[in-house]
Amino acid sequence: MSAGAAQSVSLAGPAGRLEALVELPAAAAPRLAGIVCHPHPLHGGTMHNKVVHTLARALRAGGAASLRFNFRGVGASEGTHDGGAGETDDALAAVDWARRRWPEAALILAGFSFGAVVAIRAAAAAQARWLISVAPAVDRVNLEAVQAPGCPWLIVQGADDDVVSPEAVCGWAARHAPQARLRLIPGTGHFFHGALHRVSDCVREDWPAALGH
Image (cartoon, rainbow, N blue to C red):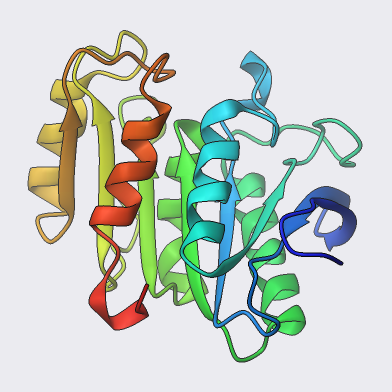
């Protein structure tokens, strides 16, 4: 596989095969591996979503191999939508695949909207070294019983999001993720139209020192 070229792979998931794409950085042996989770499957969310693509490319620019995948029932992935619980298991299956593929790499877990909530649900069990939550749908999926991860955590939120309430995200973060770095992007809606570079900037600027860059 050449650096920068996306390669299609198939992962063993708990509900069947999961369709995925892998992109490698320039380094021959990636020291980081980033898993990116996509938005809601019942509202058109796939691993080809532009915010997911932006996150994968931002991680690769920082030296990480990136893996984005389709949740169960999306694209060529087998199974049916499970409201978040099964999708969390899918994310952990992707983590297991990445750990086998790059056993020496530190793990970064990221997601957008519904995918951000799935990443939050999976982060503690995955023992992620960094969690990136973009417009996490905390007002749509119950996270009250979820164990917060102890790793560095970046939350990126559009200040004019009309899908996921910025007030709900800020309030939830204050109660449940006070350690997280919250970046509000003014004048930006849920899908970051015209502002995808701002998402990349947040990832680059908030990259934890412990991971290097």
